[in-house]
Image 1: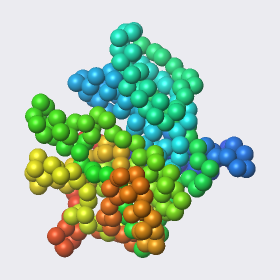
Image 2: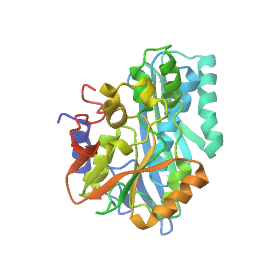
Image 3: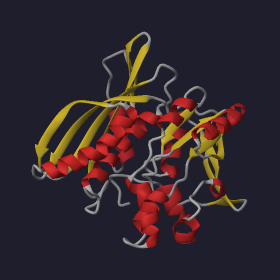
Image 4: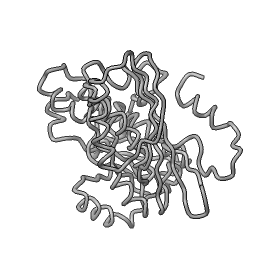
Length: 314
């Protein structure tokens, strides 16, 4: 057992004892049926000093980002976040730190009307664990529904978070990209809109290469992606050299945009949603029967990056 995926595969083999579990381990959220007409989704994320935020983050930024990343999981399922539970470990009690942390958290609690319903507090190295519960009356999106011939789409732009980490701190480029790293925008409204017709969806948290592969593997399919079509910000090419382009847009992670698949007949619907939400949605490829193929400048491209893995040397 060497990778994060190896660990997940091991856990997926564990027996479920409840027939109301629609989806357990292996997606952005678990899906539980509580009655004939109501389903809920559950997600949990832990954020640590070092891998997820650094010492230059303010408590307000930590509070915002930790909750935003959880909401992004709910968004990828086409659901609405409802309830949150927090397990917070802090080195020492500080009212000033906690008030600032809550200020960042509250921006999202108010925006999405999320209620904190419980949790736990302990003393130790800084760690934030959040469990989020959401629901959706329509179809809940999963990773495993992609069909051969489906188009592959990405919301917004990607590569920004990794770009911020590559840029020297206090540089003009770092200041430009840092807002994407620290203040990701969960695409809840987009998830709700595409849940009516999308065949699969995932949020881009571990890099496009890894997350799109997760869709393909879960669906037992392949894909073809045109790297030139992957959307980046207008200033991306200005600040990021070609040497680091692949690392940023395919392997960097922490973009928290949605990558989803849909039948070609829904292309007009997607254009209308893009206009309605004032959000760029870009087609980058198609789902195939097998294999993972990238192209660039009209030629087959070799992609080395595998995306982020918590148990690998990234």
